[in-house]
Structure formats: C-alpha cells, structure tokens
Amino acid sequence: MNRIEYFGKCLDRSDLSDDPIQMTADWIEQGRFGGIAEPEAMCLSTVDGAGQPSSRMVLMRGLSQRGLVFYTNYNSLKAHEIRENPQVACHFFWPQLHRQIRIRGVASLLTGQESDAYFASRPRTSQLSAHASQQSEVIVDRDFLETRMRQVENRYPDEVPRPQNWGGFLVAPSEFEFWQGRPSRLHDRFRYRMEEGVWLIERLAP
Ligand SMILES: Cc1cc2nc3c(=O)[nH]c(=O)nc-3n(C[C@H](O)[C@H](O)[C@H](O)COP(=O)(O)O)c2cc1C
Image 1 (spheres, rainbow, N blue to C red):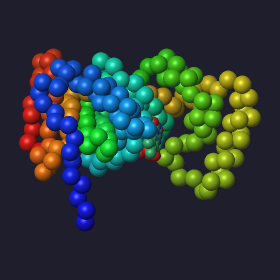
Image 2 (spheres, protein in one colour; image 1 turned 180 degrees about the vertical axis):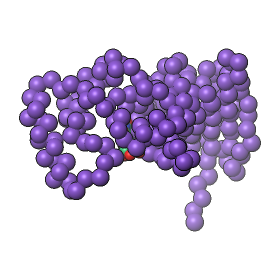
Image 3 (tube, rainbow, N blue to C red; image 1 turned 90 degrees about the vertical axis):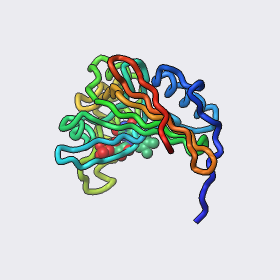
C-alpha cells in the first residue's frame, strides 16, 4: 500500500492566534485559496441516547464568536440525536493542505429569525427541496421524491416560506485541535481548551 508523506508547513506556537475561531476562519480561507472547492464542508458527529455515534457531512454556513452554524431538517436523524444529546463533534479535513481541525461543542437551535434570513437567501430549488424531502425518512422510490417536488412547486409558485421543520443549529465550541501533517508522521498538533473563560493552548504528541 502506498503511504502518503505529509510535507505541510510547520505549525508553531508563534503561528497560532489566541482565538481558535479566527484560526478556523483563516484555515478555511487558506483552503479556498489552495483550490479546495468547499472548504466549509465538515463531518458532524452526533451521539444518540444509547451512546451510539453517527457521522455525516454538512456545510458550515456561519462562523462567529458564538460558534459554527449549519442548516438541516429538524426531523432528521442528526436533529433527533442532538435533542437526545446536544454534545457534538465537527471535523474539517483538507487533504491537499495536510490539515485537519477537530472541534467539540454543544449544539442548540438557531432562532427562527436567523433561519428565516438564511432560508430566504437560498436558491428556489433548494427552498423547494427542503419542503419536498422528509430527510432521513424511508421512501419507496425516486418517483416519490420527484412527485413531491412537483407538488411543492405548484403549491409555491412565488415566494417559498421556510418549512417549520427546517433551520439552523449553532455549535458552541469548547475544544479545538489544529493538526498540520509533517514528514515522518511527526505532525504538529495544538489543542485549545476553554478554561475559566480563557482558551488554554497545548501542543499534543502526534
Ligand atoms: C459535502 C456535503 C455537504 C452536505 N451538507 C449538508 C447540510 O448542510 N445539511 C444537511 O442537512 N445535509 C447535508 N448533507 C447531507 C448529509 O450528509 C446527510 O446525508 C443528511 O443530512 C442526512 O443525515 P442524517 O440522516 O444523519 O440526519 C451534505 C452532504 C455532503 C456530502
């Protein structure tokens, strides 16, 4: 099996911002300039009431001092699991840059107003599919989905209202890890942990 040697730039304590949100924003921008098509794509992990984890990709659509925002169906598996256990993990991986970011935090519902504003900014077809698809439900076939899509197109010839079961989640982060691949598996890793309102930064062994 071929093994890829990681030769990314070194990541030193002096390269780090005190603010892990700013670091995340910087790495996403660097990913975009580095040719990554959707650097905001992240793996979101949730855990159900029985302790069984589940992961899937979502797009991060907001990043601020409050945390990370993504949008989804509030009746989906992930939303049910967040209601059972709001502790989640987010993971970005950009293989071209030999970088990953791991984030742990607590998810909560975004306000209806914030979800309305984002929904209004989406393309019409995405707005309609949010109505047509009961995300994570079992369906008989593709025709069922396309028939539903035609029905909602007819129901909403003009403006499409946000479905009540569709909106955002905010992940308030409590821990970050910034990982930079280096040669010989001697990677650089820095963890940020919130302690008494201050981000504590520690280097971890690879
Ligand atoms: C790159 C990528 C981005 C995605 N972004 C979203 C998203 O922002 N929101 C969403 O609900 N699903 C998104 N999906 C689909 C999810 O991965 C998943 O199939 C869906 O949300 C159902 O997950 P669940 O059944 O675990 O709730 C995305 C998939 C990919 C591959």
